[in-house]
Length: 290
Figure 1 (cartoon, rainbow, N blue to C red):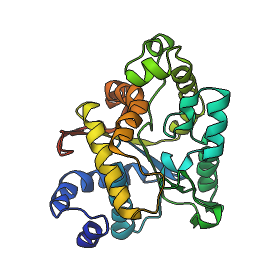
Figure 2 (figure 1 turned 180 degrees about the vertical axis):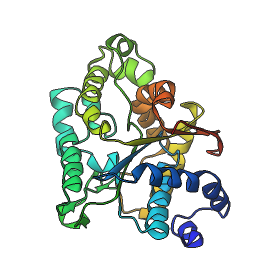
Figure 3 (figure 1 turned 135 degrees about the vertical axis):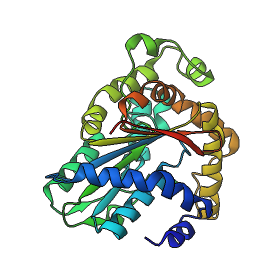
């Protein structure tokens, strides 16, 4: 694997090579061992809060398995299955205004996600959905990459991947300013929780091996998400109207707080490998169950 090319492509510091060798190459070897003899694509789920490094880890696993071991790998993000603006606007009118904002369960097309996985399993040509966050809409279908045969691995990454629903009692009490002011009756968060308990679990049940990048707490999320937005703004060079201000990011992350904190609490026990991060996103230790 050309690690220097990988670092350049993803604008990573040279220190990432050492991190990858210590933590991620052994993870890839574990994935290969578990994938041996699998009769259909081996599905790897990667969970982590916003800005934790999910996308970079996904890219590393794909590059390593492809270049070193000749495996066919398809990478999917839960973000690529977001509903378009018009669909979310309809939900905002029908259910609750907060559903206009992409992110929470209920704002993804889980039927499309399940169909995409089934097509990949069957080996038929499969178009991979792609979402453009700068325009806040899916890319045109004509631009979706097409996979012509069944892959050896499918990686599904996302901030809520693998997270179970909460109990109805847990959902009742607001946990931040957004929930208290904009969702005083709990309509939005109850809808989100009900959605999470539905087709999302069917999707997550297809995961064969789960990985978590575990943040120290939700407090890190705002800073990490801010860095992410600044990077996005620089990459589109003013072309995207969907770029958020710092204040908008602060409001935006509150949409994610409930499920992120729930994930930090319950998901480590459910994952096969957990990488424990500090506030600088440095891995300090790992918990490997298999």
